[in-house]
Image 1: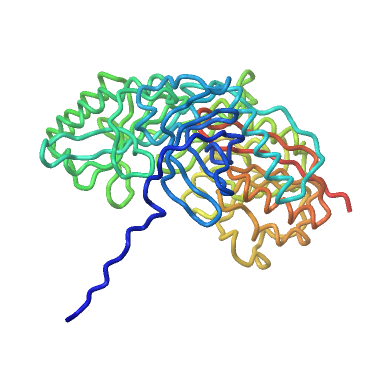
Image 2: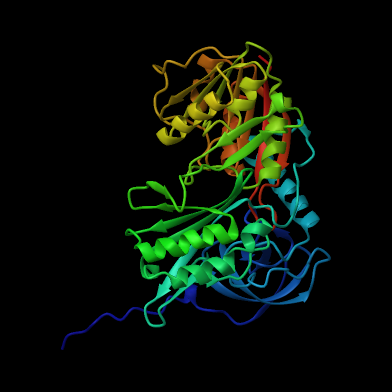
Length: 450
């Protein structure tokens, strides 16, 4: 008689009995940390100094994950989340913590990871770059989901760790004019005959107006285009359609590009602006971006005719202000379309001491035409960091390095390279680009000492 193998249930994924645990700290992703039977337990939604009731959802050899059931003894930093979608939307995961508490946690986490993995102790901790805690996002992408049974299109954000779309009526971290457009847009999209084939909707608040980018998978008919044109007139917004080829088409008018100011324009001659094609990367927090650019200029202190290299330059967020201050700036970026836009921006701002190159910054840079001795270096890499680029420090020999980071782990790893090459950490500061979330951004200044 044949025997068939029957797998045993995976006990590591089964819910445990309810436990009472004491939370002692937060991890770098904003989850509470407790101890249970010699294991570290990660509890999303829990705060330090709280006693909580949980159920273990996953158990590994050295750690476990738990689901928060109830807060028995709340922290003094605990607040009631203001957003009605907080418990279902996968976006803002620290709304249950006071804004001051969030920033204290982020600064402590930044210092901890820099000391632990880079040995980068010393250096002055600069005041954090902070701004409004709500309605700070000037750009957001909303997902769509068409239900074949109800024929209804939902517009909202993804649920945490899920592909499900949570329909929303407002977003408290999105700029108010954009948040106010969510319900009207949801109504409009459900009136289109092509609603089953629509993709995401991106909303943008720029200095020259409000913009919406609608992803379409097939051309819209005249009736749908007419409804979009009427919406443009009613809400005074620029709408453009993005097709499968990534091409953009304006609705009801020629395509207009959004524009952001990079430097204060109290004096017209000091204004520096950046235009971009929807789909290009730009910093979503305009208030903090201006403060970040100003701090980078202050720390790098560009002097006329200094040769400054801006790696991962994007469309010129730092390159343009550096050139405005008289430096000879070289910007290098890995995305060809952004290099093209950076050149357009340099010309629009009448900046001629500025050269942009397209290149793979994780590859061999020895034969690149821009590689050589420089006075100063600015880095603003993606989450993966700039480890490969920093291997060429000996050839570049910058006296100062400003590193802008969206990932403290890669910043700490790359800081170790700088310290080994004779640089000293002089300044380190938190950039609170995303209040109400666990995301930590930072800026560090290194100076050559050898």
